[in-house]
Length: 293
Ligand SMILES: NC(=O)c1ccc[n+]([C@@H]2O[C@H](COP(=O)([O-])OP(=O)(O)OC[C@H]3O[C@@H](n4cnc5c(N)ncnc54)[C@H](OP(=O)(O)O)[C@@H]3O)[C@@H](O)[C@H]2O)c1
Image: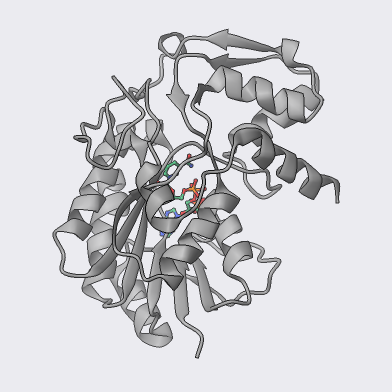
C-alpha cells in the first residue's frame, strides 16, 4: 500500500516541485489556504493550518502517514509588521497539526534562524534570529523538538525555480525583468547557498522513504551573494547582465533586518544520505531546458 502524504501550502514555490516529485509514488493530498489550478490532477483540499476545525476534519478524513508542512507566512517584512499572525501561522499551527497527528512530520525551516554574522552555519551552531520571521520559524523548530513525535526539520535557504504560477521567485523576477530590458538592482552583501526547489523535493522524498528523523541542513553547492547569483542567472539564460547593478541591503530600508552572511553547511546530510548538493549552473541549465521543452 502506498504511504499517504498530506502536503500543506502545496501551491507555493516549493509545493510545485514537491507535487511534481512525489506524484505517482505516494497517495497524495495537496492542501492550501486557497484553491489553485492543479495541473497534475492530484487530489486537492482547502486547509487553513490556523483553523483547528479544518485541521481535525482533514486529518481524520485523509488519515495521512506523513505531513509535509510547506504552509508558512514567508513575506519577511509583512511578518515584521504582523508578528501575531506570523507566530500563529509559522509556529502555533505546527503544534495544532502535531496534536492531531502521529506519523512522520516534515518541517521546512530556514537559515533566517541565524543572525548572519558568520555563516554559513552547521546544524550545531547556535540560532539567533534577527527578524520576526526567523523567530517564528525557530519557535516552530522548538515545538517539534519538544514533542515526542517523529519529526524531521530540513533547514534550507533562498529557494529558486521558475514556474509561471509562482510570483515570489527571485530568478523569475531576474529573468522576466532582463527579458523586458528593465534594469534591476540586487544586493551584493547577502550571502547564501541558493537551493533549487526540485533538488530539495528529491531530499524530501528520501526523508520519507528512509523515515528520517532529526535536524538537517540542505542547500545548493555554491556560496555566493545575491548580485553574483543574478549575474549567473543572466549568463545561463543569455540575458544582458549589464542591466544588473549592485546595491547594499541597508540602502533598501526594509522593515525586517536580514542576516547578511547566511547560508547553510550541508556536510551532515551529504554524508548521511550519501548525496551531493547540486551546483547552481547545473540547476539553472536544467530549469532552462525544461522551459524550452
Ligand atoms: N522561499 C525561500 O527562500 C525559503 C527559504 C527557507 C525556508 N523556506 C520555507 O520553505 C517553506 C515553503 O516556502 P515557499 O517559498 O514555498 O513559500 P510560499 O511560496 O510562500 O508558499 C507558502 C504557501 O502557504 C500558503 N499559506 C499561507 N497561509 C496559509 C494557511 N493559513 N494555511 C495553509 N496554507 C497557507 C500560501 O498560500 P497563499 O500564497 O495563497 O498565501 C502558499 O501557497 C516555508 O516553510 C518557508 O518558511 C523558504
